Length: 201
Image (cartoon, rainbow, N blue to C red; front, side, top):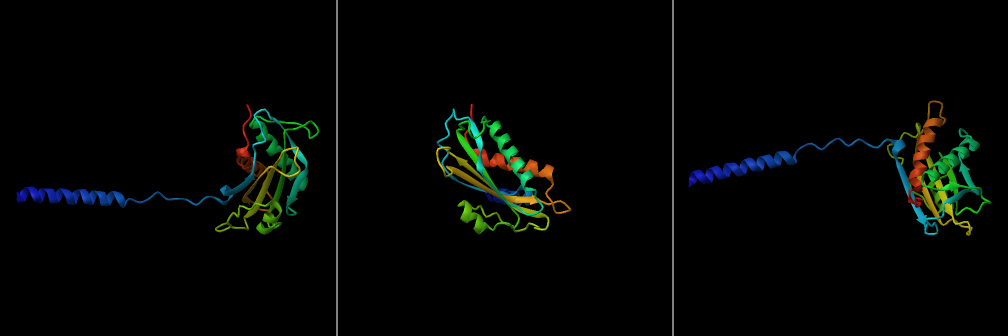
């Protein structure tokens, strides 16, 4: 009987030891997210006015708002924004038309880069602010950017839905935006921002 109890005690000790070893295994190393991959978004409003047959959209002729530093060419940035929005909308099944061709929805936008607008000013003007954190970001190498998209029912003066995204854009050696990489990042951001819009058949 003592032999059986001794063997049972040894078995329990071995099981306990194995369990302790399995619990104490090292966790995989979690690498911090690169600043250019950080993106914080907040949205507000209602997109229910967009029906499945509402496939025509236009860029809002009066809502192209820029607050950027001297290193950015405004006309070039506007062109990039228009191209990115058009590409994403067409990929979702929408077709672009002129503003006088009775579009089913209008899209306006705003962009702020660097220190041109504080989060408080953005909140006051846009009614939204994601508040992306600059902690751990070398702001000598990265620039904070805010992009606002507004979706309008053409029958209404105020936007029906809006989404604001904030993130960081790397600067190149002469402190200007690297255009090719900026275009790729902008396309990814716009795609995420317009993810809530229904895809058209």
